[in-house]
Length: 290
Image 1 (cartoon, rainbow, N blue to C red):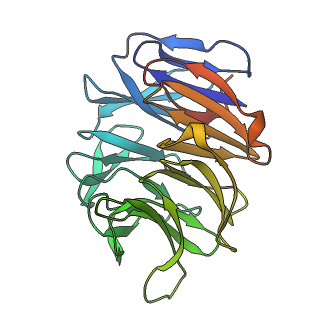
Image 2 (image 1 turned 135 degrees about the horizontal axis):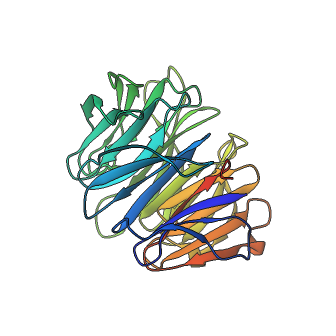
């Protein structure tokens, strides 16, 4: 299982096997960040130049270069790989760009300091957490027309799709901050509170089974059973891990503050292994690199 890694000190590289060093793709990208991949394509941004680079996985040839939104905090490819979605945590917006040319096709406002978006499995809907506002937004993809604004009782920090509809992670306000996880079933009038966890929220990722999720808080990284509203396990040392990704039975954790990337079996979290250490490392699964 190959992994694409970006790190300000290392550059951009690919981990081919657990236990091996990352194969360097290049150091000429100043402060690379926000890697993403789908099918035969991969992309990452350069913080200093505010440029996004799209490449083919098999031969590392450049497909296009395009502007990155200010404060880019999330990117993803469409299933057809014709579009790249960029989320801005500074300009409070989402952009749709053409992968082949880098042209800006669509743009839409999205909350205040948003920091997470997810593309639905069919590729026709984009879900954006509002950030500092009590809302999440469901948009058409790629046109970015608003389908719905989902109102929450607290600022919405993360959101994802799951088997039962939408999953929303919010932070209570005040001195005693808690993480509140909501489910929002189709045709429901309002989100339903599922569970409260101690401390402020970090990242969120629905697991491949569609009925459990990884939720990071100040208390650790927990696997949450979404049907029962209970925790299967919690790993305290991976608290406030912002970037989470699952593929098959594995989870990929990027702790940018500590510069670590960890590969963790979802069913056996004690067998986790740090596969890369740097300064501000971020990573994503990359399946088709030759």
